[in-house]
Image (cartoon, rainbow, N blue to C red; front, top):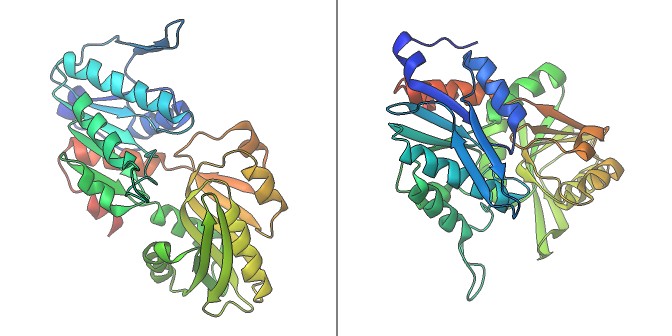
Amino acid sequence: MAGLGTDHQHRMKLLACNSNRPLAEAIARHLDRPLTQAKIKRFADMEVFVEILENVRGEDVFVIQSTSNPANDHLMELLVVLDALKRASAKRVTAVVPYYGYARQDRKVGPRTPISAKLVANLITKAGANRVLTLDLHAGQIQGFFDIPLDNLFAAPVFEKDIRDRLNGERLVIVSPDVGGVVRARSLANRLDAQLAIIDKRREHAGMSEVMNVIGRVDGCRCILIDDIVDSGGTLCNAAGALIEQGAVSVAAYCTHGVLSNQAVERIEMSPIHELVITDSIQATDAVQGGTKIRQLSIAPLMGDAILRISEERSVSSLFM
């Protein structure tokens, strides 16, 4: 449990929106702080209504909201809350967005297509956020889409501890499911003093992938796939099959954000993946909770420590040293 000085006990407030109330409550418990009372509801036509039920004038307010499914509703909720806090004269408002939706639309993929990650950054800034705290952005360049400070945390220390606790002494290979994730996989491999392998794949259509080749030796090893987002699960399942074909003893997957849309849980259950480990950056659906191969790790201590450091004007990057 983190401790707070008297001045910060007065200044810092935590406010939870509706996308992931359990995570917000866990962060509040870690910081030994109550959640600020607020009314966030819908009118009959589903418009968002917000009323902050406590005085926030001159306060340092942290709004906790993942923009997960339904992404548009949760994004609009966040924007309206930010506007309410700005108009209530909060001294500083930090948007705590454990899962940053629209992050996969970070560049133009063809003529006349949007860069939605930039649009969302503009909306959050204009709505009244003074800074942003998020976790494992899909693309690092999204940090440059904001003209306000942004802290991008990493789930790697949480994953590292879990892997050491469960697989210490095993012959491990950390595997990136695509070329774009090599930096993330290499960082974890270095932390664990493990070997690195890469899946070379070709994506034919959005949401579908075809594994082409395994770069690196995995024969006789326990493989750990590492990624930031698991959505349909197709990439991970195809990669796991390729690794088993190359002689891997077992394949586990560690992914920060468990989007797991449509039939993803069933796909994981039917795949060669031994276990999928995700964080609680997105509230688990009934399907995820019912999955026999899916396990969640809490990021509440990590997010809580970062919130405290921001409030006390201390280094956030030192959390990862």
